[in-house]
Image 1 (tube, rainbow, N blue to C red):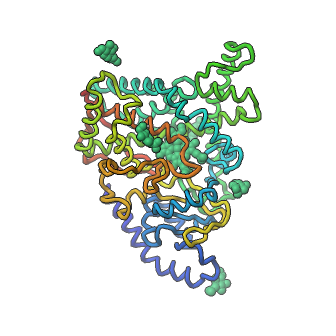
Image 2 (cartoon, rainbow, N blue to C red):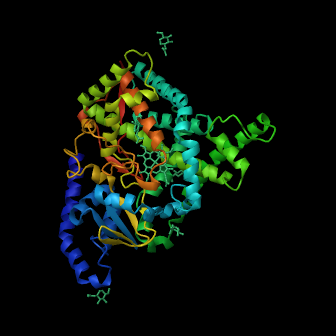
Image 3 (spheres, rainbow, N blue to C red):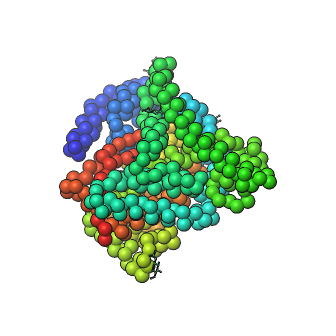
Length: 507
Ligand code: HEM
Ligand SMILES: *[C@@H]1O[C@H](CO)[C@@H](O)[C@H](O)[C@H]1NC(C)=O
Ligand SMILES: *[C@@H]1O[C@H](CO)[C@@H](O)[C@H](O)[C@H]1NC(C)=O
Ligand SMILES: *[C@@H]1O[C@H](CO)[C@@H](O)[C@H](O)[C@H]1NC(C)=O
Ligand SMILES: *[C@@H]1O[C@H](CO)[C@@H](O)[C@H](O)[C@H]1NC(C)=O
Ligand SMILES: *[C@@H]1O[C@H](CO)[C@@H](O)[C@H](O)[C@H]1NC(C)=O
Ligand SMILES: CC(=O)N[C@H]1CO[C@H](CO)[C@@H](O)[C@@H]1O
């Protein structure tokens, strides 16, 4: 499988090199036609669009291309100028020095269907509405205060996960790590927000919810044909988009139901003016806000916010834990080191890891960093768009250009990391490198003003879940660890192509 993949890139690379003279001739001979200050790249060669479309892993293809053209290059995907950046220094210019010029998102056409881009904080242009949503998530959802207040809740959800694993343990049953963690991550979120479990372990309804979100994600992530060749837009893949719409509508329907039910309980509980003074969860806080001044925060804002957060929070968390577990099972010595650290810290406590323990588990934190370095859930971050023409690094980035930051390539760049392909958490032990968006060699959460707002939550959820899983259980796979399939599949997030199934063994 691996060799096969490698062959494929090899072939791709060869093909490129054969094409290079043509591309070169094409570009140089007609350079008067285009702006010569654009970053280098195979300009105006539509076949590249095709190749990307064909390649299931565009982050690999673009990493190869940037070996030819350098860490800042421009491509023409259909009619859209795309700037691909793949070095920490250049990334810093974009998301630090010139951050305000790249605050807009470039919206995949599939998402424009349901006006999703107009309402969702993740895709909307960086205007007043976006600033408002950022402020609300910062104050009401992911502030240290709010996260502290809900610490017990997260802990409780992790206990449920451990109980579930315990049961699989008794039956010596292999368990889908991603699936189990997905349920936990979803429930942590849904309890943060509405104080209910959206996903009981292993029920049909979860699958439905997952499928719906999945389809939406895939639609957003793959560079679809009409995106690359807008001329095809007239076909519009109508049936497809309508289906997406139905699905989004369905998800929104779930949130509507929850909101309406809450409004009803509130009206009976707090009969005076419907304002809850006892701030029990995010929904209550937001409804209070909505009651204070409906124009500030409408019910539609609310349900789209929920939808966005569920899409953003689902598989990022579970796929990171899944990758981490795969790497740890592949590297037993690393697993051992991580576990001993936890056992040593916890030996005088008879409980499982709590949030305040994390700061005393540097190795566990390093494992998470190393996982995010090699397997960033968003290999291109989430594409931004140039608001106006910008001069970067001596090149001209034109207005409306789409910016792809290949964090996946940076994570595996030998100029940036020693032995980039090896899983070595130790590399983070004696550095201060963190993923808060200031160290540009490691920015799985993005950087600048549009950095992932869920960062604080993820920084608590990831180590707690992973730490608990390896503290209480040893893990083995059917067959040899070295046979674990580490292939990736690309939607808007990077997931394992073959889910990790592992058998827990109680310690
Ligand atoms: C391992 C976990 C996660 C990773 C690696 C991750 C990564 C990212 C990245 C790379 C971006 C784009 C940043 C940029 O443009 O510079 C982003 C945006 C976003 N993330 Fe996350 N994320 C994670 C977890 C979460 C969680 C748990 C939530 C919420 C529940 C969340 C909510 C969002 C939202 C709403 C945005 C859009 C922000 C905006 O456009 O203003 N993320 N995330
Ligand atoms: C560049 O291409 C255009 C047509 O696309 C042609 O008219 C023009 O002569 C070409 N310029 C050069 C320098 O070859
Ligand atoms: C959602 O979309 C997927 C694939 O596009 C489809 O299989 C599924 O049936 C849809 N769900 C609904 C409720 O339409
Ligand atoms: C921890 O141990 C103490 C006594 O040693 C006991 O009272 C407490 O219930 C235990 N807690 C848990 C979670 O087992
Ligand atoms: C993540 O949590 C750890 C431990 O609490 C803390 O030291 C670190 O600064 C946090 N990182 C970010 C990016 O918030
Ligand atoms: C961001 O994009 C929107 C439309 O997509 C546009 O109206 C707006 O002007 C852009 N923002 C800025 C600051 O240019
Ligand atoms: C909708 C969606 O992305 N679902 C995913 C959530 O995470 C689990 C575990 O990684 C995936 O299996 C789902 O496909």
